[in-house]
Every structure is written in structure tokens, then in C-alpha cells.
Image 1 (cartoon, one colour):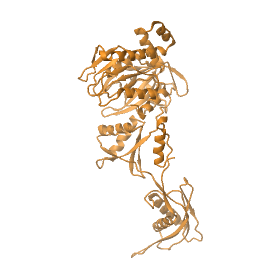
Image 2 (cartoon, rainbow, N blue to C red):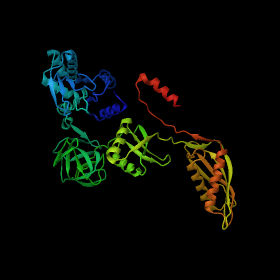
Image 3 (cartoon, rainbow, N blue to C red):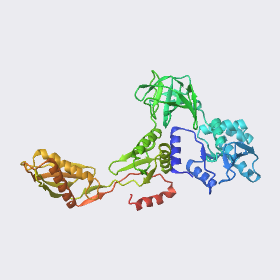
Image 4 (cartoon, rainbow, N blue to C red):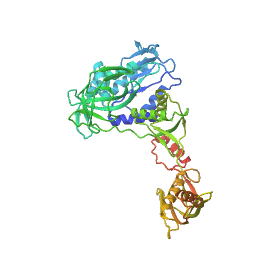
Length: 513
């Protein structure tokens, strides 16, 4: 059904003004409730959702759909070729097909006043009127047609692609595009060259492939273009048009087309390439913030570097996920747009870089602090056969407001601790705070004052005072009513009204408010 990821992609497409088709995939699986899925689509995306196809049956025997354009049953080959034959609609499905076909025609007619008048007068639309009306309705977001497929068994895919080619609006039909400074640029193959790099992929034997869309002009092999991110020049080498895994070398790419170029020097996803002497720059691609995260570790020792390199290259290809090494928690954190997104990333990490990882729960970044003032003495004295070690300091710990982090005070008077040893005292305090006292979590929001102590003219050293400071801090900390702080997160939850109570209850049960 409609999942969070579906709604995110839908919202982004709407924001970009991109016409939308809906594809219900995996209809070869068991226990598919097609009608329930369609009902969910209508609830989520509105009355514009209208069936263009429906399955004869779902499950392992899914190999046929009723096409409401042609009013035929399309039966797909069992060999996975995607080829199909047209047959008459089974008698038991004829009434259903007629009703849904009528609903599709009415949706198209309602999108255009002229078509609506003709439909009322004649009671139907001609084939040409329906086709042209459907194309306009799709471009205007007046209809969101629903198609049926199984990508695994290649059922419905070929027909879907034919529909996209014939009825989705071509780039030049969408008029002009806006540059970053708000200027309009006509989609014209004879205009100034301007292309947007929207994806970067690392190929094992080719290096980096930069996918781009030409919005204006015609980009040719051998062209010198400007990357308007910083003004550096790029030479266009070999250009490929891709069809799945197949690459076809071409000499030129006109406005509206998509292709890929190899081995650009310093061009990344979101960069604009334009004609020399021009300063055309398209708006930066606004990638959504990740909403879910996981922690990973290698199954085999020594694979840490392979994971790091692999994630770096995958991030170049897909900037919608982030990763980082959490030095505090000693975990590699990967965050993405949903559970499926994370699964795909980890699967590609294994397939492309031959490294297996295990998932684990991200650790919680707790903190330690104090709730009252306390003092303590730390005295480090060690005597060996030669020179000894001596350091003695008195510390006072005071609680601070949340978010204040750390403050240090030097209240030594009379030179009881020489000034050259004060930095060592502070270093001992900071290192102890980083390691934690109660449970190994960093200490925050504490003011530390060194106010007394003593030293030995021969045996005192920076190391001795550092150890003494750590001893004093730990003692004072335990006497200052220490506590562990939990992180507080502000989250935004979007949920249908009927589930609001359940979600609020779930949040409350986790002490959320």
C-alpha cells in the first residue's frame, strides 16, 4: 500500500511540478488485496487517482491485465520477455471493465471544458479526443492513472513504457525552466548549452559517470563547458545514452534528453554545466533530510576501510543518505529516507564492494552532569629510586545551565601551584570529562575551579598535576549529586487523523510530550 516513502516521493514530485503515473508493482505476490490498495491511493492522493488497468488475478498466476485504453486483455509471455498478446476481455470481467473505462473517460473529459461539452453532447469521446485529452490531463495533474506490473516476471512493464512514451509530456512541451536567479530558459536545442548533473555513479572499469539532463542547447563530444559552481572548465569526453545496463555512445545530446559523460575533473551531483561565456546556473537540488538511521559494523575484521570507501562512493551516487563515524559511540551511523532505503544501501555496499555488514541499534549519546557544588583534593605522590612524582590540587565543581558545556577558573593565589602547571590541571579535568565518571559518558555543564594545592620543587611535573586533577575531579563529581542526561529530540509526525490518538499514546509511553 501507500507507505511513508511513497508519500515523500509524491510530495517532492508535486513540489517540482512533475506529472505522475502510479504503478502497483509486485502483483505476483501472495495475498494481494488490489482493491484495498487502490482505495488507499484514493485516500492519500485524491479523486484524480483513476485506474488505467486492473489485474485479471493477482498472485503467482498474475500474467494478464485488462487495459482500459484498448479495452482488451493483455496476456504477457511466461518467458519474462515482456511481450504480450491482445485478447478479448473475459465475459465475467466485461461489466467491471465497462464501468472503469467510463470512469476513466469521464475523468479525462472533466479536465477540459471543450471535451466536457463534447462528452455531454455525444455521450462519448473519439479515440483521438480521448488520447489528446488524456495527455493534457496528465500534464495538468488532473488525472493520476494507475497501472499494474510485476517487475520480477516482466508483466505489464513494456505496456507501461509505451504509455509513458506516448502520453507523458515531453520536455519541450513543458515550456520554460527557471534558473537560480529566476530567469526563464526556453527548452530549445538551438539555445545556449545548459545541463544539470543530477546523479553520479562509479563504474568499476570506467570511473565516474555523471548523469545529466540538457535543458537548453545541444551538448557535444569535445565541447568545453563551464561548471558554474566555481567557474572551472570541463572538457566533454565520451557521451553515453543508457538503456538499463546497456550504453550507447553518441556524439551529441539535444535539449530535453538525458545522457551520461565519463571522467569529468571536478563535477558533482547538482552542478550546472553551461556554454563558455555564459553564467547559467540551475537551482541547487534540495535533498530531503534523513528520517531514520541504523548502525553498522563489518562481519569480517579489517573491512572498516572498505566500508568507509564504499559508503563514500555510494553517497556520491545518492546524496539523500548520510553516514558518519561517531567517535564518541564508536559506531558507523548510516541514515536515510526509510527502512527500504537503508536496506538498498547496505545491499549495494555488499554487491558493489564485496563487504558484508551487520546492523545494530545506534547507541544513545547520554551525558553526565552534576546537581550541586562539591570540592575534593587530588594528591598524586609516587616515589621511586630516582626522581619522584608529586602533584596536589583542590577542585571545586559547580553545576551550570543546560547547554553551557564547560568553564574553568584559576583561583590560585600565592603561587601554591606554579602557573606553568595550571594547563596540566585543566588538561586532566578535560580528559576525565570526555571519558565520563558515572557510566563512561561525556560530562557537560560543569564549572571547575582550581583554588588550592601544593607542589614539590623537584618532583612536581605536568604529568603529576594532570593525574592529581583527574583524581580530584572524580572525587568531587561523585559528591556533587551526579546524574545521567538523556538526549531530547524534537520530531515532526505526520499522521492521518484517525491514527492521531494511537500515535500520541505511543509517544507518551516513551515519555514523549
